[in-house]
Image (cartoon, rainbow, N blue to C red; front, side, top):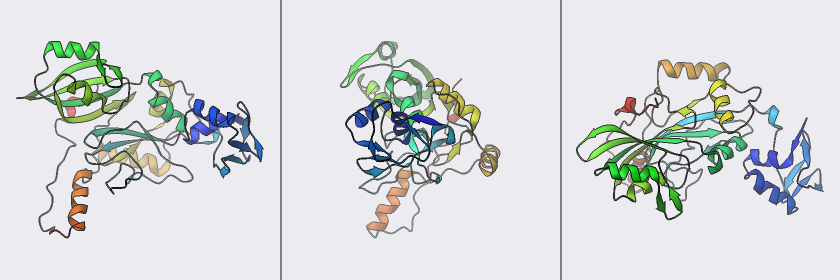
Length: 310
């Protein structure tokens, strides 16, 4: 069984398929010691190199497609490494033998909620690409009055620094005083897009929680700082949204399946948030007293039922 070279490279997570075609056309890729051409196919056992470096790979049908849902707490950054030594979203993910987790989209350090991770680079690229218009749903707490005129303006669209943007849907979730919760949907994953849309109308977002990405809804039983692995049905639905065929071997088996079932019945407690963990690290580095424990903040159940997708 063989597969197109650019498709294999994209799935490994080195870039989009189009970018990999450019890399191949530039003569930077070799298969079994010979410079490859765009459209060449590769089989199991072939030696693949980019710029002389050997690349580990598997043919698509041999790989078990996996997807994790992670409930990001406030204070963690969406990066594998951080020069400032801040907590990252990768710290508590499970190890994956001979493979790696690819993050789908991002959330800024002050945002919380659903993050997807997969071992399928092609799936990740398609889920993030603007042309596929995958919906991202957020629960947003806004300081200030959202008038009917502002709501209509944000649904119609406004001009941001990087081009026009809008909400696909906008609904009121309630609240008191100057802080009210809203549920909004966007189809792009631009940097701080939801916050910037509200800021364009003179409003400030005080909390932002992602509750859905495509067909995946943040599970009710999942707590902050914890992850859960999706089963075959959910992964196949997500793959179909970006026109990827279901794959053999997808789904949970053995201990992984029992762990997921157990989490539904007895959810793990929320993990200490990234902000508080970083605060503790700073105190330790500065030699400050830790006699007083940092206050515990539980983001998991504060009105969460309101935010589930209908």
